[in-house]
Image (cartoon, rainbow, N blue to C red):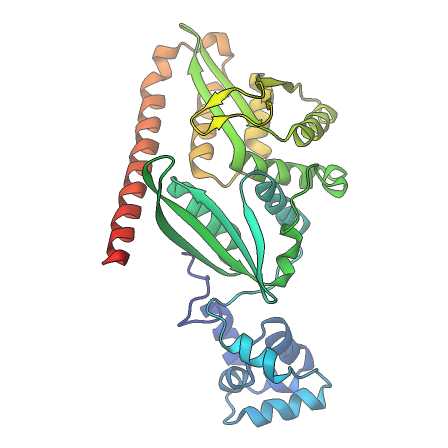
Length: 341
């Protein structure tokens, strides 16, 4: 968990707590400071009093009334005081919001858990996804890994959960298209695409006989999202290819497909290198593969790279990732069995 993530012992980040304590009674005398502590961070009057260095929460109530800051009713105050996981409001940054919406469209399950809480969940066997969830949501709430045994795959896996406040209600709806405001801004679109790719994308680094082959591919049932992404990539001068990867009814390990699976792919070396430099990916497995591609193909055409020359590096990276997955599964098993004792 990030050092700035809130915990039950430290309900606000340590760095922020130190800043507040240094301000002392100015936290009460300044209406903006007090409103931020009480209304935005939703700290109790007792907590505000302790941070401000005064002995009584009645002093805090006095300054709340003086600054005409609405005081919570008893029900709301009680609920907030007993929240298990602290949470903080979203900053409102459009690029960060675009990334979150893309990640939501690809892999996240989001629902309202209470009138104060939005719950975000993703199931995974990869430690890289837990790290990603912590980097995206850790500064806004508490990220909790919960292991369980998946009967369908017959292995131990994790649900990674994040508990967020109501400012993240924009994640509840799962739009079937890329939002228009995202498509109208190139940086927001790249952030959205990065989130969607972190959830659904694949970095292909393989070979066809001797020459090495590279590809960025997203395979999903979200045909409309892929079409929107393809059009946006074309406006950027790229040449994505979209096709049906597998038809409806195709047999899978989870049963017949309920719809056709579509894929969107980039094959050209220069375009892959361009996206590698401009997509703000956070999934470490994918960024490591892209780093290897950039290192290998920055100054060489595809036909100039023989598979035998890069096979050791590719196999080493694959073994690293496989070992991480096995270790993560073993940790899930140990933790789950320990909780059942």
